Picture 1: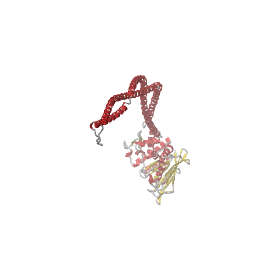
Picture 2 (picture 1 turned 180 degrees about the vertical axis):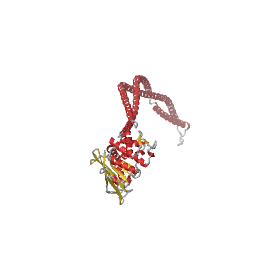
Picture 3 (picture 1 turned 60 degrees about the horizontal axis):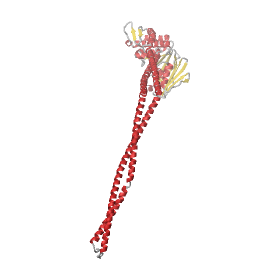
Picture 4 (picture 1 turned 60 degrees about the vertical axis):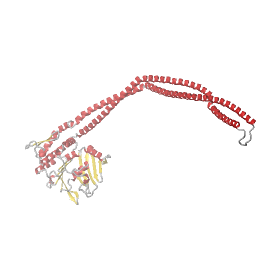
Length: 570
């Protein structure tokens, strides 16, 4: 049970810089009165603000701070739950949110929203909507149960019956189902990948075994062929080298012909010059008897002897020139032989070079083939390793299939739990169990207020109303006073349900202006009887404008505006 003890607030709405404190436990029935704007309803906003961080009325949060002082807005509330004393403090400008347990600060999370969840889910165990349905009945901005949507009605009932946990569980199960399905999808992909790897590994092993030896044999045949070609090239080189040696020996015989020929041609030129000189001298002595230079007679004997000498020299030079011509022809032939041999040797050298290139290429191909044979042989020798890889793939596949089967089985279990926890599952059965009690209590309180109708809520929280006067009546067909009676009956019923379930049972009941507009005089008297004699476990606070109710309550609290600030008067 939540036992509210005190609330105090300052700089909150129209309240000033001094704390306004209200004791929730001092009296059973309390009347709060005051003129419009005096601040009598401020307690409602302060109560919901400090507990749920939102006012009861439709007021923006920044507007809660007093417009005059504009800061140090603070609300504190003291209450106990299960022998633990709590103090909750919440403020604006500066922002404050503190929770104390038995005088010690509660460990705060980094996020105020997380602290708010702790307050609602772990301490109060009630949210704003349910709290207002069983603790507060207001006439201005409050939305009564009968005016809530079907989903919101369900939330209120589930909170009162402590079955919201099933919705939370269902949500968790739904998330788990989604997670499991994602895991199954991933496992299916993994399974397919492992199957592909197994297939590829099996094909690799089969290819390794089926083609390995064939490839080795084929490469060995290629190597033999290359070796034969290499041997052929080497034999060809031997022949070419032999021919080159023979030609080289022949070249030795004609080596130097070019130099010798050059010398002979020089000698030939010199002889030709001498022949020309002798011929000129012979012509001079033959044609001249007198010296043309000194005009003296040339002696005849000298002239004849000179002619004879010149002729003899001419004969000698002629003979030498002819011999030289023969020698030159011989050397020219030797030079031609040298050139021919040189060309042949060059051709043979080129052939040897080509053969050597082919030999090198064949040797490189042989090395590549031998390396390939070595690799294939190594792979064949490592078949066990590849088989181990295959077995590992098989083992992983089997484990994946088993894990996948487990996840699918978990999905089956989660689906079953999900079907149980849906709105039409366990929750509906529990609600069915309590619906007769709820309907009985509502009608009991209606009869206490002399409102004789048969009110029923169904499993979908729709109402059926049977009236002695009208058939197929509905809540919306009632007058405002009749609606108020239904709202009050539901409020009291929710408190009975809460007490029965001990979920949100509390000592506090606040009603805002329920007497001022909707209840006539007769209804007011009946209602006062209810809160005086029936609702004995609650401290009741009634906010009203009516001045004729003072003697009906144990305590009267008056609010007035003093110098622009709301103040509680004793």
